[in-house]
Length: 218
Image (cartoon, rainbow, N blue to C red; front, side, top):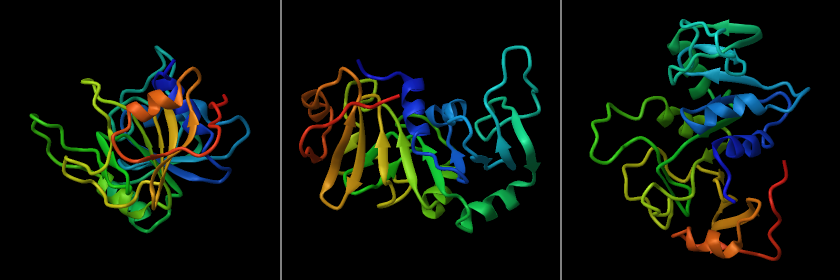
């Protein structure tokens, strides 16, 4: 079976490393905060001016004034710091974020990402995603492999306006872990119960499959 949103977030949490400064985008990426490995020191940053995000609050214990960039209520870790958004973006643009995890509507086989323009809807702009994809040292996309119509999100070329060009390093979907290489998408792992053939069928762009593909481990 394909993973649910929490499964995607749990797998991405395995990509974190001790001492990392990480920015989590709106949607599935925010769930990663709930799965940081025990004993690992990871500092989560939010564009609206917070360093030191903790897990989502338990029901009844939320502080309405304490939110992330996606306006979700959050908790803070010991030693958390609050500051203005100008300082927050100075951190991002200065290259001080080790990893950013964000969602996407489309990813091309050369690492382009389209993550902000929703067809048929009025969208004010791409927000901080433009700065994040241009400045973060590593970029992982968390998304479903196909859209609601069953169409692939992993394309030869993006059709929507781009957020960033040639910037995505790894993609974790409900079906697979895929790396972006100079030759195209490379299949690294498959979700439990999902076949390579199903992943190939759901991927429009070039998919490189080498040897036996292991299942994700949790």
